[in-house]
Image (cartoon, rainbow, N blue to C red):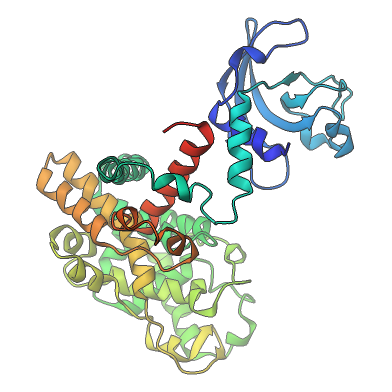
Length: 417
């Protein structure tokens, strides 16, 4: 048995709840399983359990047998002192943390059929383990299930956007700007882009939308990329020096405080995805004539919506990827694939939420139709589903595909039809 199987049981609560008991045989109630940790450290963070009249909050560690806690050296690592429950497949030893405190350990019990299903999935040579099972499901069910997944996906994204909308005082322009900026990080630089958007309000940028250079100066300066010493080859770069001069004036005018330039990540990124290029492209989007958010809400055709986001970085970046270092000439277009990522994760959810808040079903339906029109990405996962035409015909976006993939895995492992 592998730990990942026990992780799955714990994460989705697919175990016999009465099997969890403390050392005195009292039941342990799981209030929240916690957040799954894919990196080093405890397996689940911020979990909550109740034993007797006491509620505990902390981390969960999972092993196939309890002695693995010591075998992995966790008993000498203070990072594991906040373990509130040690979930195991077999209790073969009492264990203590680095402070010498005995850790509450409980054996997890489950339906053996789940493990049989798990083995069938992991030993399947196909990338999609339940590939063969999905063909047995009625097409009518698939059609309506996929439609429900689209709405569920949009509702989920709208939840986080609604919080931003509330925090910005119900300002749609500011909300759109913040959500858009976040996804310009494309995972690697998500956090610094969020910090940039918080440090530089859209209302400040909005005063300079007729001057792209000033918008770039505001973005690059507040991002911290104009910090002295960050780009050593840029000391004598005229464009770089002009940005610094412009930003010094604007930051004094608006009392701006830059984020730290060292937060931005360049390592292991393709040069066209460097944050320097993305910031220039973001400036191009923000300076769209008529206002970016207003254009997005008004457009009724997906191709016209795409055109709004097909921008290029400013001319300086045609032969640069970073400040002060020349490169081979290439116009830095914001590609269609990248644009579709923004449409799926930012634009369409905001259109959908705008329709919901204004009780406008026409706008909501438009958002749904946009979502369904976007073609799936051309990757190995999509290729695996191609032999199932009645399913791939409904998988109209990468986000929907990911949701369907996870959903099918859950169905197969839990033994449901």
